[in-house]
Length: 367
Image 1 (cartoon, rainbow, N blue to C red):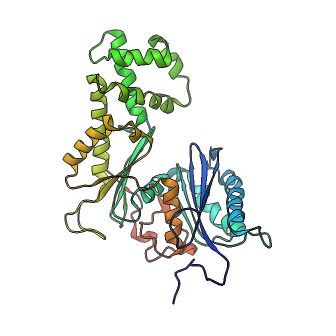
Image 2: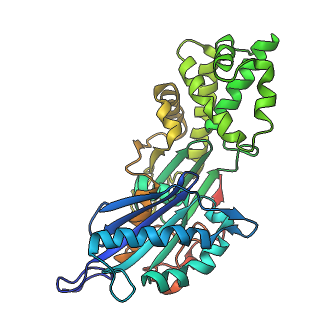
Image 3: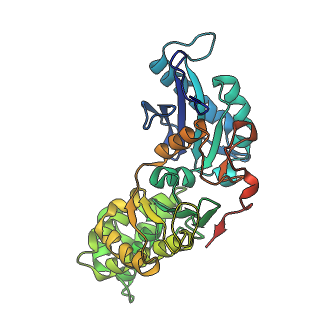
């Protein structure tokens, strides 16, 4: 019987895959067996990878990833032999925040460094939205909305990627946590001033959370983490929405923005994997949707209006799960998600399966 690349031989050493998720809360690493679902073990490096003038710092990422990977491999396969961990690393996939725009150093430095240090020959470097997609939907056509402080929607018909929003709190991220928090603070300040559109309920929450309303600009504007501070008020908006029409209206507007982004990227015509006229699944992932029904209920209504027939599903897994799934697919020679020079980059020598980057547009469609 012919085994796919990366499948273990019963008489040989164990064959592993590694998935990595690099974001604002640090670097997470998952170890799995080639050909088997799910992680065997995970670990967290709590220091976020630095970003500098040259983009994401490849050296800083390696300084955290390599010890973590060796620890996981040693734990699973025994102590290293000849300077390398026991067992073969068939494939490794890294999803990183900022990969699409700040990942040049990662794409140029990591393939050689990981081949030297871990013997990795099959490597994928992905934007975190792509690993969020793989974790939420797998390798099926559809769309994922990743909502947290910001908001981005990503979809694919398995031929190319389509992106909407994710442009940051000054240019977009409409409907995300910072957007909701800012709208709530605006409504509170309107109530403070006696202007139309104000919410006394939200003004009470501002005073409880931040102190006197007139002191809020001095607390907010000097902060370098303003999006996170804005987003911290979003749960207060959700908590008020049941009794306060202004807060409920903010969440309805947010739901409209999120649904518009999903509709812009979700495949709705015939393509690989679904019937003519069928609509892809829409998965929701990220902390934003932990607000529950005050946001989810109007979002389902908006999605039903803009994407009739689409099935809204909870995410099957998180971005770390998605990175591990991409590594598993690479190891098996079965990566069906579309390659892209910055969204999902697989070095040529890594073996990209039946497709290559020439089948993908240079830039994802936006809207």
